[in-house]
Image (tube, rainbow, N blue to C red):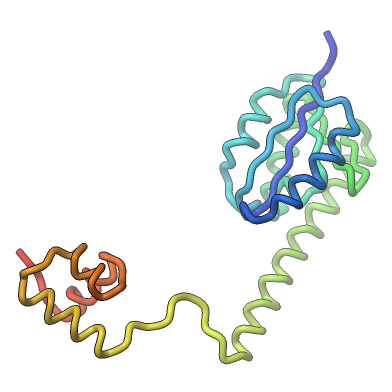
Length: 189
């Protein structure tokens, strides 16, 4: 029985279709038995398509990836995954880093690069936080203006409209209406 090669590709956002295409083309140069693809953060512990790919792998099979960052952004996750693959005698092959865990040097290289990948992800996060702290930019939605808050409170107190109707009339979400009313100490019970 021939050992399988299962491919896995991933991007973080569903707007990164080009990233998936680049990965797909690189993996298709190998004789894949199956290819799993998804668009989800690499920091997520459970990813549906990765889980499916891992379930399809059996002893002697190979999980083929474009690079380690596609598998995970956390060295802990990568090392745990590598341990799981080793226990099941499943190999990992990464195209960009030229890693093949069929060899001892491939396993060592994997462990070193997993640490570097986590360091890089943490460095990017730290630089982003520092840049935001040193700028006037704020993340998230802008605060609701006072006159709009007052209007929401008045409409809520009049009790003529539902939360949904107030939200539509004021151009906010129902949750925002609820939160403003709650903060003002109002309740419709």
